[in-house]
Image 1 (cartoon, rainbow, N blue to C red):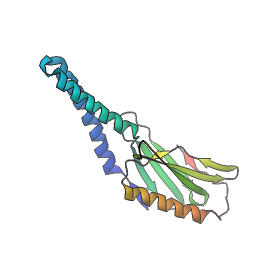
Image 2: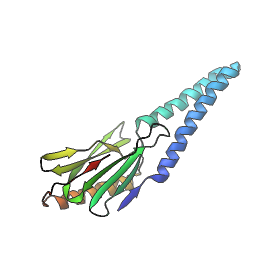
Image 3: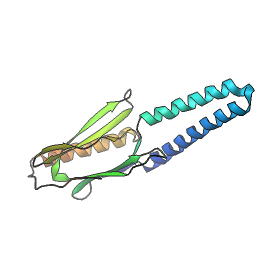
Image 4: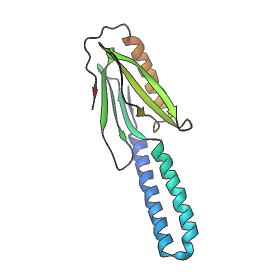
Amino acid sequence: MIVDSKLETAKTRMTFVTLFGLSIASFTIAYLVPEYLVPAIVIAILLLVGYLYMHFLQLYYVYFSDAGDKIMVRFYYAHPFMRKYKAIEIPKNALAGAEIKTGFFGKKMQLILIQRTVKGEIKYPPVSLSLLNAKKQADIVKALQKLANASKNQPINKPRGKYY
């Protein structure tokens, strides 16, 4: 199964850019035309609050695939600036489970993958699933639960999970 948030990411990036641009335009109008000072500042503040709300949700582009012998999660911050491309690869027989954390008034959903190794369990850094709709989030959780249950009785042959 493959889950991709390409369309949602493009919409989010455009929203970030639009909010940021409109905020700058409002401040510029407030500076250049003194009689529009109060309405322009109010609009700019509202736009900045919307921008900060989206920023605190930590919206990520997410690509999830469980095809083949590895579970692959690729992700990056959906903000147009400050992007770092990251990926997690875990062999299917080494998946110990996944934790789901919610926050920011129930709007922020994070996935934490757990891998079994010879020395114990490893928790990977959280990946935000907030940008995905509820169906895609549920599909990822169901797939991970199914894979974790199937891999519990399999031996660990020094699996090499990757995070880069």
